[in-house]
Image 1 (cartoon, helix red, strand yellow):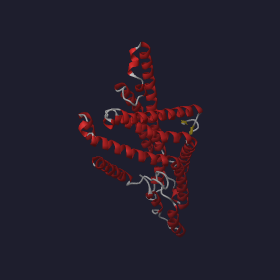
Image 2 (cartoon, helix red, strand yellow; image 1 turned 135 degrees about the horizontal axis):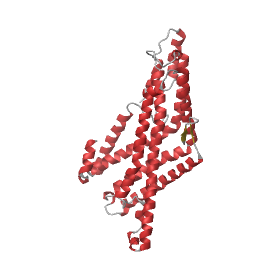
Image 3 (cartoon, rainbow, N blue to C red; image 1 turned 120 degrees about the vertical axis):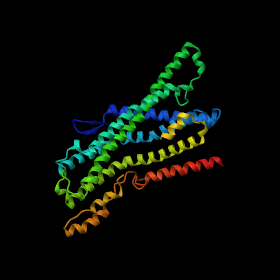
Amino acid sequence: MKFDPSTQKFVGTQKLRKLQLYGCLSVTLQMINNCWRTHQIYTEYPGGSHHPSFHICFAFGFTTVMASFPLWLVYFKQEEINTGMNRVLKYSVQFQGNWMQKYIPEESFYSRAIDLVLSVCIFFTSCGPWTSFGFFILAPDTPIFAHTILPKTMTETMVGYLAYNVALLADLFFFFGTAVTIWFLVLAFGSLSAMFVFPICSIVGSELQFGPQIENRDKLLFDFGNVHHEYNCVQLLHKEVMNIIGFILFYMHGMCGQFCLYCNFVIIKEWDRLDVHTMRLGEGLTPTEENTEILEKHKTESALDKKLIPRVRRSCRPLDFGAEGIFAIRRNTILKFFRGIVKGTFRALLTIGK
């Protein structure tokens, strides 16, 4: 999908759908090749898991497995994502027109934060594919590349030499295209997350708070009925977006945890074999339940409002990021994540040691 400035909406075209399908297929084929070659190294190559190319092949295979599910989910849920993001944009503009008529986007912290996040995402995702290109140039004989299946003896003849180089160039473009697709997935989620999270945080975290009068906010927004209506709108938008993105967050959280566990295990287990540069590199190196508290801070002299506020507050659900009933990102999620990584690493080391 793409953003159409003339209509101020996200739209999808047949050309973009075809490119998206080609990207999904290329990542899937690369995933199958990486997993097969990794298993082949483990079972057939001398040394098995101690082979010099095993860990890098496993890492590439794990990365493609991690990217395949989000890509296919986004492909099949394209219309739902377009509808959800268009509703978020429409509601943000409507909210600004109703309650923030003196609002100046160019001077807002959240607007600048969106610009900063988008700029960082575009910069890093633009540089990312070229690292894969450089890796291919520096290490073309890595077993995950498809052309390594061909026997080296075929280069002894002129025809075989030309065929091998044609396969090498085709594999280069195929691998580079796969890398571009994966990094574009990172760009898409980074930009869409910024466009969704920051407006929601701006509305819930600032405009719906009851405290000192904000100059850019309409006085009628202090009315309890208006606050209740706006929060319900935000809650419905958030639920619609999380019905799709929540499962991706749950999947990526689990896969990233396993990948970090694998990296820690490899570094500790193979510490004696690390070169000096790798060792030096290692040395160098949230709104949830508080959303409903905005109704607690409401100060009013109306007796009816004082009775309604506690009841409405209990009926409002917190805006959790994640899959409803399965996984939610909270303030202690990061601590639990690192704790699980550390415990898993030591358990793996103790198991292998026995």
